[in-house]
Image 1: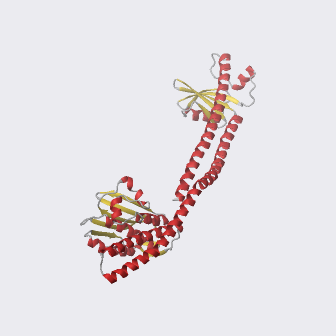
Image 2: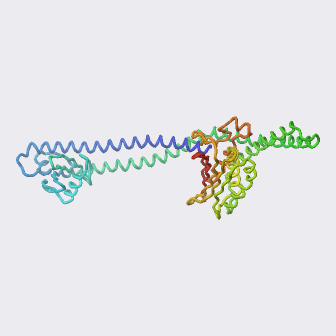
Image 3: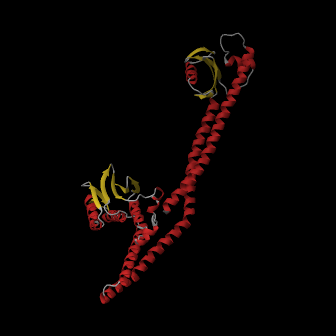
Length: 401
């Protein structure tokens, strides 16, 4: 629970700060790009304006070098401006000194939807005239280089920023969760200590009740005491089991025949199922082996099967399935009965949570069984889910083989 809370806080901080940093960097890069392209296209407009004033009734656009020499323009960074007319992917008109590379760039630009941008070391601008496109290419290597440096710098700053944010988010999440973790640890220790302390007086009460029963025979008051002691013993044992699992995630692994263990675990409950006149159906695939702790698997099956028996009425059915799905082992226990409300299906795996509180209280059920089952499944990095369909409530456990 603490680890989940820590991860949630970490990801909230990480995503929030990363979004802000990347947003600023993207905005800065886009602004720089737009500013560079806009400045270049404005310069193109000035040059083209000079050309329009000086050139009339001519069959080709005037070369940039001619315009610069005639107008005395001092543009040291600009190496050349070239104008080409493209019709259906072919160059139909061009200025002087156009190389094959420039023609290829112009044709490629004509296929784009953008009106302006850059390609190679050229900033381009596109105008449309009827079926033709007028492509103006301005060679400005230094401006393109600056633009690339800005983009590369933004990427580097973004990567470094994300690493720094990761470290900050991790530290902040640890600081925020620390008081909660300390309180939770104290709570776990209290539950563990209290459970151990309760075992002794319960054992004494149970022993004295047995002695009294031997002396005076069957008595309803003694029976009430014994029943309550048994319920308290179960609660204390469940609390100790939870505390033990929370304090260690170690698994005593050994390879065993899971099919046989499931069959044996189900067999333990057959008398109880028979007494309640419930129909039992098993579909257990043979020779399924699992590397884990036998007691953990027995515990999971006994908890879910006991829960199914408690919620299945006379002449209804319980189905136990065991099969292998790709790399997962799937254990499914279905019982015919009342469905679990959709909004309760996640909550039932929380400790002390009970769907029908009045009924569970009367049956001395404290809402710890499914919490223990989930804790065991989590230890194996598996999943446990509840669902209701076609009159059956299913508990499905999937554990990686």
